[in-house]
Image (cartoon, rainbow, N blue to C red; front, side):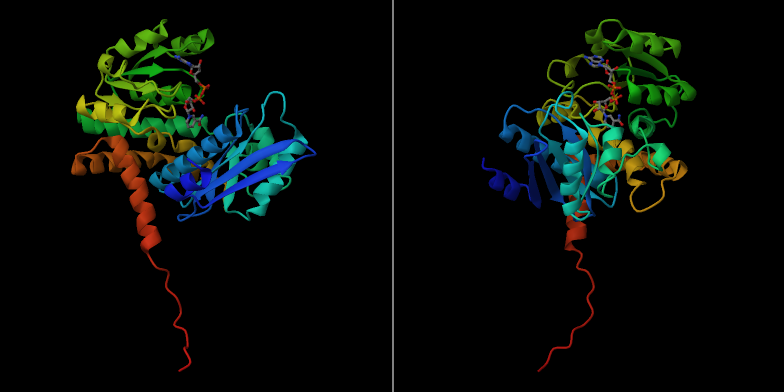
Length: 361
Ligand code: NAD
């Protein structure tokens, strides 16, 4: 489908193409929807094979941010940037400064932040040119690494799921199978440990497994075996597409709650989980702790305490999706989209009050 057709079909507002011969910059900034506020989304730096792949990716990711920010109740729209380059070999300061100029031309309609291929340090460079950047280090008054907030958010969303599936407010005595023990899972595990949960962990990285073992987690050496682990909650915290027709029938749990993006291989897998009676916490809702944390940098002085309080409300965001899913008899993945879209629809429909105008006869 032609790009303009895709944009019209999914209501995109804008696609900015950024080219600079001097630095070799080729980038795209997609603004999907600003109904709820300025669009916020990361700057991905990735060497896609073709220009079409790069544009398709940035459009898809920008739309994803609209849903994520809306479902999290943020006063932010969805956008994303993609610098079409290899972050290891082609990224440089001059290129990032030119990219920042393009961000600046949007006058705040798009706010950038870290993503795959970009770093906190890159955001510092970008902040020299534009103020429409977040994810700055704590030393510069920013919110720093979001993984801590994401881990807390997953824990809170998991509690809402466990309340629904197991009728309890506590994780005490629950077994959580964790796939991938990286930054987010490490922080989440601290909350689970304090709450008295038992954890079964797998990872492809031996150091990660050592960290998990040091926290008292049970270790599963074979990463594939984690799907068969007897548990109440399965927590995908590594890769996307791990919930698919091969893995779903193997799961022993009633709840899926983890941080990985795009956990469902296809939309049909979300329907399948629903049919199997497994409560799936939609990834973009439960993993919004990081973006909530970052949002506290915008238009205010970042406060860790205020951001943490805000991340705690992911319990309510996940509970709302569960409630809509029950009311409408639809899978949670579809309920999440409904919640996100409905908020935007309502805000769009509300007409701003205008002062009465004098109309000459
Ligand atoms: P990370 O790289 O620190 O951790 C990922 C872990 O998964 C690593 O330890 C890696 O070895 C392990 N892993 C990779 N493949 C695996 C496999 N096949 N089986 C088992 N383990 C495997 O990443 P992170 O920051 O903790 O993020 C985890 C996930 O959450 C990612 O999908 C990320 O996109 C998503 N996410 C992260 C944040 C955040 O704030 N960091 C926010 C939203 C979403």
